Each structure stands twice: as C-alpha cells, then as structure tokens.
Length: 168
Length: 151
Image (cartoon, rainbow over all chains, first blue to last red; front, top):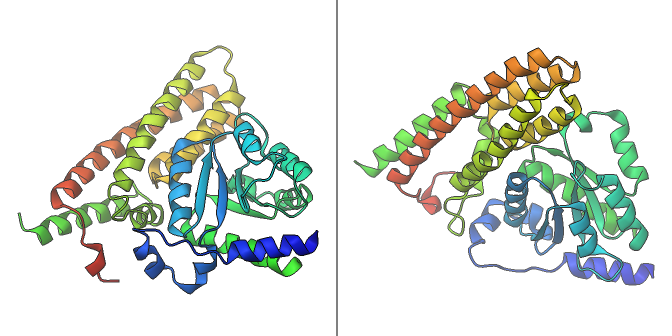
C-alpha cells in the first residue's frame, strides 16, 4: 500500500502541464516552484473574493485548481471514492461546517497522509499557539495565514509536498 | 496624451494611494502580478467583486446593529468576513477600522460598534472613489507592455 502511494505521489508531482498564456509565470518563478506545476489542488473557500484571488495565485504557480465554496461541496468532491486531488486548501472559517470537521472526515475516508491538507486561516487565529498543534492532531499537514501572499503559499506548499515525499 | 505620460500618471496615483495608507502596497502589487494576457483586467474585476460582495455584508451589519439586544457574535462573524476580504485587496484603512470594530464587538460595546462602523463606511466609500479614478486612468493609459517592463 505504501509503495503504491509513493509511486502515485512521485508520478503526480513530476507532471508538467504546459498551458498557453502561462509562459510569463514560468519566467517569473523558475526552478524553485516548478515542481508545483500540475499539482491538483482543491481550494475550499467560502468568500468569493478570497477564492478568486487564491485561485489565481495557485494558477500562477502552475497548479490545477478546483474551487469549492463550502464544507459540504468539499466532502462531495473528495468523498470515499477515488479523487484526483493531491492537496486540499481548507478555509477553517467555513460557514456550513467547521474546517476541522471537514478535515476529520477526509482523513476518515482517505488515508492518513493523502491528500495533503493545508488550513487557511486569518492571522489572529494563527497566532494562537495551540492552533498549529490542533492542526497536526487533526491530521492536517500545514497552515497558511491570510491574507495570502504568493511566496507564503508557495513556501508552505513546497514544505508540505517535500515532507510527504520524504516520509514515504 | 503620450502613452508614457499616461502610465506615469497611473503609477503616481498608485504610489499616492500607498503613501496615504489607503492601500497596502504588498497586497495590491500582488494583485497586479496576477494580471496577465489571459487575465488583463484581474485587478479591476477583483475590486468590483469586493464592492459587490461587501455591499451585502455592510447591509447585514447595519441591520444587526439596529436590533435590540445586539447579537455581538453575529456582528463579529460578519465583520470577520468583511475584514478578511478587505485585507485581500489591500484596503488598509478599511481593514484597520474593521479591527477596531471587532474590539468593541468583543467588549460588547454597542455604542463603540456603531461609531466605528460609521468610520468603516467612510473609509470604504472613500477608497471606492479613489479606485474608480485609478481604474479610469489605467484604462485610458492602456495595457502595460509587460514583456518589456524593466524588472
């Protein structure tokens, strides 16, 4: 099982999907972010504005983004059946379901380490010492602070993806 | 008008918005970085989206402030959202007033909330006018030739 997981992970991360119109982004962010290209990301964010901006950021990094706007939508898209998402970016402050609840359900349906789940939260909440610990306990892999900046999200994604590669 | 002159005007206005604290330069510059040939009007689209979505929130907050007794939890929740999206477009002064509002909210101070909300609306409206002018100027100047823009 572990072997299959590793093979999937390696294969997925090494995908390079070239898209028309994205040539300027690869010149802006060369090798350091190139392994994020083609990364299948589920973006779960209820605020329309934040979702638009974050989606654009991720696309600029070369990710393949599926925008979702609620906890339930997220669970339907991920669910127990196979899904192609490698990473889930999860807003903790969703209006319908608690972000941790969503993460717990994903972990229940899927394996402990797949997909990678990153929490997105406002700075004031992220400053709480136990937030990081709670995230780790709930099976999340990382935390991204809002408002989201390109380098911040790239760094955290890189850290989490590299870590996942090392573990297996 | 000379194209370079128009672009300089746009740049000058943008810098003054940063200098006067209306916009956070990091956030706003990032939005501009996300604009490209495939998404040539991204910044204006995002700002339009912001004003459209937040209009609903402003209305909800006004209604919540009129209720007696005030539901501070609900207010805080609305304001959290409002602050979040204001922050995403770099609306610096608006965000600052929102933070102040939330402090009054947490203290259960209805009077303070109402006073601060007037400030929130004032900054929100002032920024909208500035940005309308800015986008008008930008549209007149035409798209920046990004391929040749010095790094």
